[in-house]
Image (cartoon, rainbow, N blue to C red; front, top):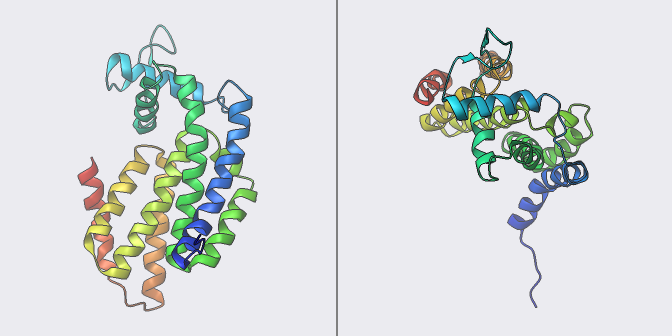
Length: 227
């Protein structure tokens, strides 16, 4: 029996190790408790049901009765939560619980993959475990928009790096689409993401790196395509 493992298989195993560990860690409280881990998920459940029954709207007529109040939160996560809940007969609490381990997996894997493409496998492997040991990791386990936006955060930086490295504008457009998705999920994260990309371009310019910095102009173009 041939049980040899080639270098590509080892690379994949190392890339997924920390993300799988994050998924397993999150599965423990997910299976132990019958309710989602986050208290603010109840607001997002309310918003997903509001969109499901009333369609897309900018006014919440249910809370702050009898006047209602405007909706300031972007809708992307609420649409996702509502769509997943329909797979479980409209049970939004169950849908939120199921999202927990997948969001934790997505945050850690997207981060480690970004580090892998920019700095290499060894740094990526170590970074994956460091992010699990970090204080914010408990937030990544929660079914909230911040967790989803962090996935877009890492992937967009990775894709933008590929656009500079390979001189392919399509990657810049895709990165812009991901920035737009982050903005419709959690605007504060999207703002930080945009500032990181701006700072990254400034640093490349200062150090005279021979990258095609005009690809930065494809970011707003991709964001407009998403909208």
